[in-house]
Image 1 (cartoon, rainbow, N blue to C red):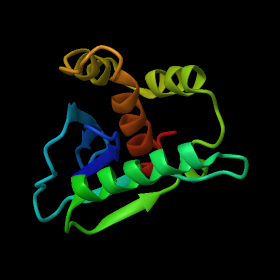
Image 2 (cartoon, rainbow, N blue to C red):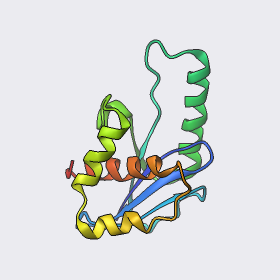
Image 3 (cartoon, rainbow, N blue to C red):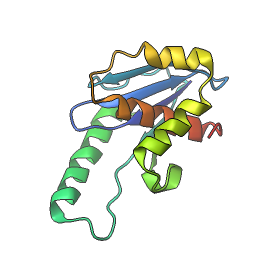
Length: 136
């Protein structure tokens, strides 16, 4: 199983993919991961760009801490945003993510119990998983 994580300071978007590459569950949670031994974990890690101010850099450090808290002692592949989605605006990127999903996976996404305004974390986790699996 592949578990993809998009960190947030208070909670994270998480997407679970079967070995076949099918999205089977997604969530927005603050609970640390406790995957099965055979799980592969991939997590976005924040990136500071030139021109980012001190305030933004500090916020990114908080995100990095959240990523570590979520994945804990698990062997995790950390990926920077520029390496998996580039500088594509969120609305365009999320439309691409949705376009890659099967009808069944779209139902899985629609069943996600995610607070209003936090779906972007879940969509980023799904996108990271899709990219890792070579589906995007």
